[in-house]
Length: 199
Image (tube, rainbow, N blue to C red; front, side, top):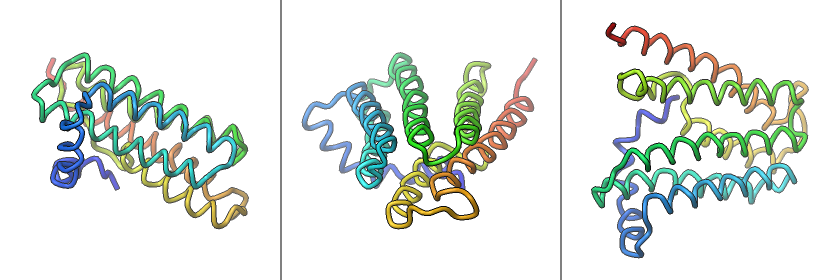
């Protein structure tokens, strides 16, 4: 998977949205905050099993999360503060969405915790690479873009078929994948960064 590797190719697709954002005066930080608010709403909707609307707001989170950096580059206002704000709100967005799904009863809490730790550790290892002087690591089997696509796809399928498959709902299996593949991704990123660190 690793859709994060396609980021450069998405630039052309996002450009019309970037142009609109710039035209209406939407700042990069405003895009970041809008993305975060969309994630909070999505998590709340997942909790109340309002799946179609939850998927819509996950999609909006994805769009505005991609917009903040693109708008910053377009306006040439990239900053460490903006990057820091983006990382922090992305992690809280992940927490709200994943917790909304498993506390809403879509999956046993044990799998929810496994998913949450997998998501957070894979993301942490990606940004920690920057902290030790290595380029940010987007590698591994399951990146954030992959997770968002899986949540949206899983949410759509779950809205049509709310039943269980081998003991778990569709969203339950999605979170199980987040847990297992998230920790594998974390180990892949750890290994890759370890090899690049110069003592």
